Image (cartoon, rainbow, N blue to C red; front, side, top):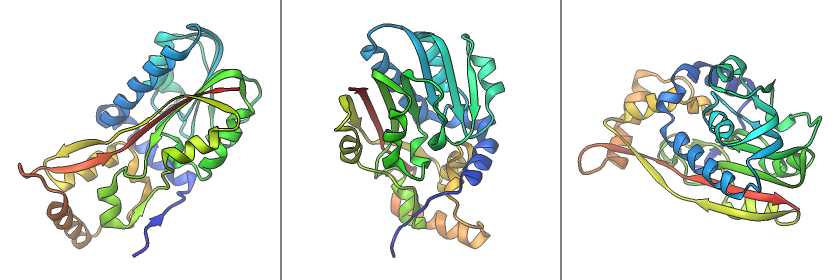
Length: 256
């Protein structure tokens, strides 16, 4: 059966992440590790910790945003998300900032930035190949573009059982999209596994981080039991736990 690589409606994504805002920080363990690693590589490659302007696209609850402001001083901060998270940001950010609520793929560049960052967001974009071109509209020459997203093996257990998944470009795709106008400073992809007591705990984890925006239709009792049985059979470990695979991918590039 052919895998249904879905382009999810932005309204649906917003609804699911809105519902997950209260639980996201507590359960987004992989995303926290991704943010920490991205932040460390950004700060290592900035010529100075004082910048004129910084933009984060798809900032969510502000996990990475807070870290950025702890390590960087900027005269102008712009944060963007599909959900209206401005009040969340106010609680955790120390420097003044502007916020734009809307689709990052259509972000209106009214100024140029020294640093554009996006973490765990671009996998939801409809046209990831055009994201680099869009960022060029608002990135200063010698400015940094820092992206954290996921590779093709991400959540492969879910995709294997439901036949549904997002479009995940390969690292080589990102390199190709960057090669003409950017100097690639850092690129890496790794595999991380999380372990859960039951397949139902896997689904709860995904729901609390908004990832179920991909949608499996209506979970009838029978459909849920079939999923649980198959997950247990295919992805259980020797200690009777089950695994869930993430494949984070990081890129930092300088605009020539």
